[in-house]
Amino acid sequence: MKIKMAYKTRDELPKGMEELYDEVDGEFRLTGVEGMKTPEDVSRVQQSLVNERKAHGETKRKLTALTDVLPADADATVIAEQLSSLEELKAENDALKKKGNTIDGALRSVAADLKVIPMALDDVLIRGRSIFEIAEDGQIVTREGVAGVKPGLDPKAWLTDMQDKAGHWWATSVGGGAGGSRANIPAGGNPFSAKNWNMTAQGKYIQEHGIEKAQRLAAQAGTVVGGPQPKA
Image (cartoon, rainbow, N blue to C red):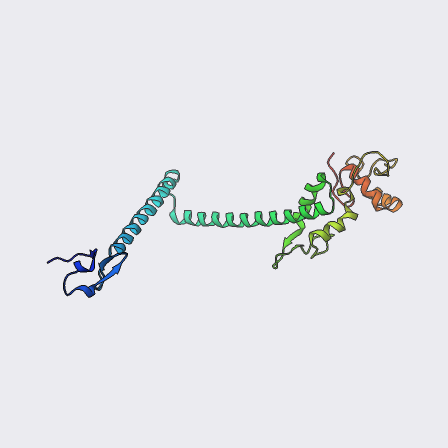
């Protein structure tokens, strides 16, 4: 007599073999034989084989596509090393991009709080990216070794300090009008302009008129006190 793997009721179980069956999901299944695979076990194995075949097929497809574009004498080891290097470079690039976005976000937020004018925001971000870093504790602070910048400043402290050094970031106007928003240009021309660039004359102007007016004069020429010579 052949026995079945499962019976619907206990009464159907073969005489003397009742202990080999357990009730599972409303039926009696043969579980008392050591090493015997259940239908579920077989199903899982079959599904694993299907998944493995799919994975092998995808890998083969990618390798075939790669082989089609590589020279016949291409060295597999060299290619593997190059691919690994590309992955590392991509990871580094993603990390740098994430770092840059974090610093930019902090600078934008502080610049908005301190009322930096919109047209100066790009200048703020360009300068900020070159001097800020993300410390081990996650804080955004100025790096060491940056000329003219105290290390360890957060974005708010740095921008507050820049109000004296780059006043044009907050200027409401660099044209004519009331309130002295435009500095008087010396007889010899604006020493901060590309045409009349003269550091000696710049220093003299600062001594005679003060840093605030010098900043306005520099802003009219498209630069800042201590900044680079503007393009003509």
